[in-house]
Length: 457
Image 1 (cartoon, rainbow, N blue to C red):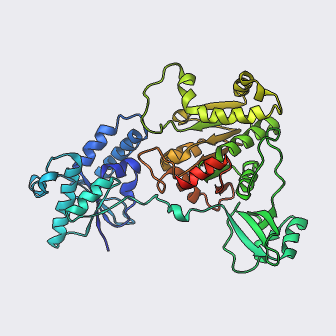
Image 2: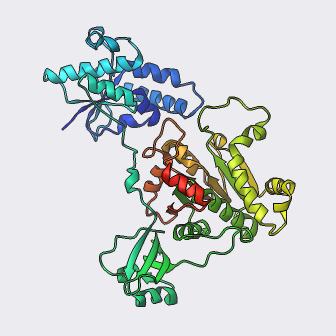
Image 3: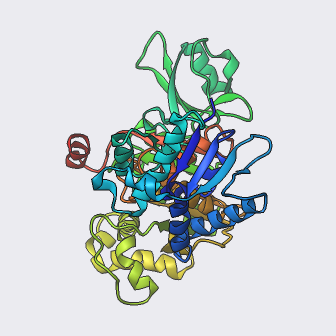
């Protein structure tokens, strides 16, 4: 059944192409939304870019006809678009508490007017689409159907983990090791379909304690045993569990150009990515430079502007990255090296910068760049929107590997949540691609206290 969808401003700022995603339904944009889009168009952030894109799209549709009367969005789908004014008499019908005339109430009045036309039998069923929780509550209170915008949402409970278990015979496991591979068709029936670069734990049916770790290669359609992970950066980091082993296998494979790592605090996402990056840049020389970046979004209340040049301003934001690099490079010295000399340890990562092997920068300045032959790590990627993730990944040049890490349950960006952030969206979009791999890390390895806190608090 066709419906009428009334869109809130935040839907268009979240996804500027939302106007085109309602197939053969009727889309109504209140004039208040156009006014709010106009106020955002000079914003230098992503919201401003999205606002400008929405304005351009509306202007293109305006050339097809009168927006007040309705125009066809796409001839193939049959969807239509209208821009509607808020009538004073409809606004007056709102409860006294909602007659303030602010933006949300005006949008609510437009949706209510569309609803009244539906009741009179001259209109389609009406749904208000908004990402504002309170506006959905208001809509429900006045008898309107309201929904969140879920086109780009991912069910976090069903998120692809990146690995699975397959029970098989010891003979097949021996063939994987001795012959260097086993076609998927020769696995026992009943196992879930494997996807490219998925980690597989082969379990002996007769002796469950006998296991073998492998990876499914999509191009060949065969399981191949994991190579023994080489020591990365002179050995301070080695995988401590099965998931870390799968992750390190993907991180150290130049053929895998995109890796996503998801896990709670302390599972080793950032440390593994940086350790593998240092190894591939400084030891193996596969890449020219390790580029590390993260979104500049504070936890809690922002402390305001920071003094100094760009490097000094970025210091507090990049301190977690620097701490991990100091740990890796400090452990490089072995017993009594830089571990006993804080000054040497503090300068270790700056030495890498001086040699041109390391670059730490804000994600804000990545637009327009082309990044070839670099090992790129994007930390705290759960704070990015799908549009920002697309912008980052499309910067990747020839010979570059990009790793995105994050925890969908620790989001500081008020405009995304565990199901609508760019990291989980990327995992689902690249699932099964030969150039991409993903692992969800489950077990905390930072410390016993950190693991207990992550589970209990």
